[in-house]
Image (cartoon, rainbow, N blue to C red):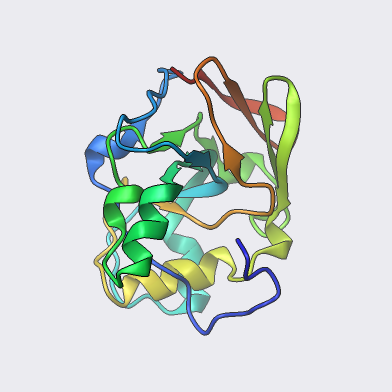
Length: 189
């Protein structure tokens, strides 16, 4: 995202309303307020117990499932809001902007910091990542967020995107994989 070699002191955090959640293979509808809607493929962790101010060494006890998700962003709106110094939650938290795939239990996978994930758009790989390459590890992210928000069972945390962010258009088909398992598939309308 233009800062690939820059390690920030802390993760960037924003929230999405529950109306942002898109699951079950339902189509994603590009909102009318953007001309530049982009996908950001991410590993998503599911919180499994109540927690606040969680120490990094205990963070692994607070999530039990993962999936691949897409954090849709109205990029043109984000750039406009940023240029004015305004908050930009509306460009990321709109209805349907948090697509998630099938949840996979952690005990079915290798170490959470050693997972490959990827996104195909219309049959071509457009993003691929490995959790070992993340700027902040999953435990670090969970711990950091819990300093500000009480984490509750069922909360979802999108952990950040690798290179390859790009636009979506009507008619696109998006398919997400965790390791070699297809766990996310839907169309753009």
